[in-house]
Length: 292
Length: 313
Image (tube, rainbow over the protein chains, first blue to last red):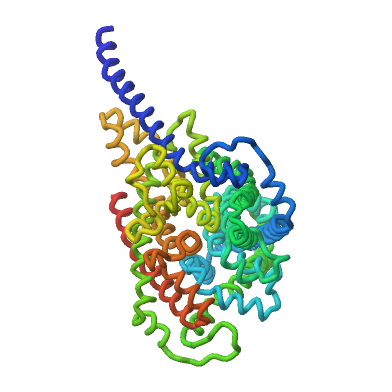
């Protein structure tokens, strides 16, 4: 009994210490989190304000919640045309990148050879190359192919530029799938084709989500390439449209209120992708941890 | 079981040949796209870097290494290289350590953790263009008592009017402000990679350390920091590559100003290629950057490998 008490005492002091530390860390984190959220707060808040309220104070709470800024943005074609174009380009790029990247990564990881190792290295070295090393020849190339101002032109460039990451992720993932899985499939008389589409590709959901998330952010937010590919306003994705909208709004009357509403509407679609994909990401991490 | 294996081996040649064909079919789409739209442009870029191509005309003259010589001899161009390196070093330092501490705090079980994680991850969804527009408003200088940037307004509200200033317009603070803004965007990604690494560290290590009486910070230093090396290498290499590649966020935030205080190489590349019609020079500049990245990544890789090996032994 006595011995038990003595052993308990230091344990208790550790606990107290830990509780103090925990609340200190939490407090620090909340302060940092407030700083992190502040710019988003500014964006969201001002999108609901009238211009006068914005000029009075960009950080004060709006006096009346008005959706008039959103109504204005929705009343213009810029946003919807940009949204449609961005959605088409994103969907096209992601599906092409995922399917071609996964197939190539699968072959490189599961049927290794010297040539495939070389191919893999060639792909992965591409990660280190800055966009500007190839952007102007790329634009010239798609102009020559007649793909300037075409969705396909942008899609092919985004897929090519995302391919190093796709190969890196898929090769890594398919390399970790246990050999038994493949052997079992082979015993069942599965061809490589069916093995990929029925077993390996469905298994790669966490990897695919990672790739989709990283590339969606990159493609959705890209301005430079999109501006060079599209001269035609009706084909232009959202970010160049925002850049133009900003120019018009600042140029005419400093309409920051409209700009903030447009910005919110640009962030929402990519946030939706994030929320959907994030669930699979977490599930993937949990599964990975359980399998050990 | 044996019979099944035997059946599988009945037609090894035919299966082998089909296997080979499917392998090629799987590789071809990715390879074609990559070769045509990535490798071919890169190699033409190398070619253009030896010419005076203006980006529009069909003809161009071969001018040997003139573009490369111009990069190193023209001080306005060359100056962007140290600026880029300065940005890269600051960016890497802030994020390798900042990201580590954030991940450490996010790795705990607490009722706030899910909300906190979301808070740190959301900024990475915001494009460089938007970051530029919004943060310029946040950092804006004091024009008069009714018209000033948000930070200056906050300083006025807490009664620290003396600290008000022009954060982006000051040569001494501009780069630091740019780095901190970049950290706002990248903190989520960096800490996510650290978190993934932290979750693999076996719990027993901490339990053993606890029994041995090691305090929290000792555990963090001797276990977490040392076991996290794979995540650390990925982070350092990604941060290095990304900071040397960065363009959009800095461009929309400062346009390279004040003066050339935040003018990174890529801004110069874009300027020469688009406004000055010197695509050949732009290509040469970006190839120098690419070589630079390649060398630095190799060096970091070797150093980290050595460290990784040292820890394993």
